[in-house]
Image: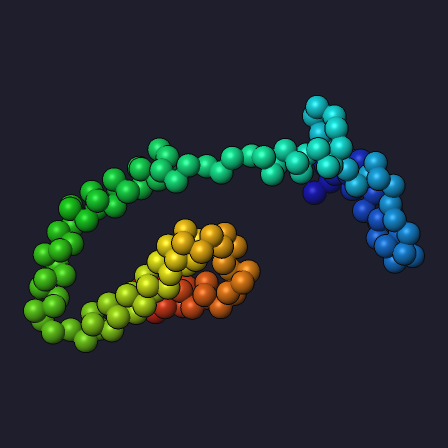
Length: 140
């Protein structure tokens, strides 16, 4: 990509300064702000930013879409027929899905809502990979 212009030039200078142990000028480190200001002001503004609501148009659409797909494909009828066929694949997939959902609910309900830990993936780094692996195994 050749359209770098002015932003492509300072990178080698920064690398050289980092190798030499000197700091680059503060004017090069500050982000380009439209309204002016410093980097401290922009981070303070980001901290004050309210989180998005849990139920918005996008999430409501996906909830309604999942309900429509469940109804259209007769999901519960298919589950009933599969259970009656005594499929061990269905039983093992259901157990893995239950394990995945239990870890997810533990993270969301207990850790985040009850304990107030917002970054539970930092304090318990193994929870996310376990949930991901069990979900992929249940999907297979």
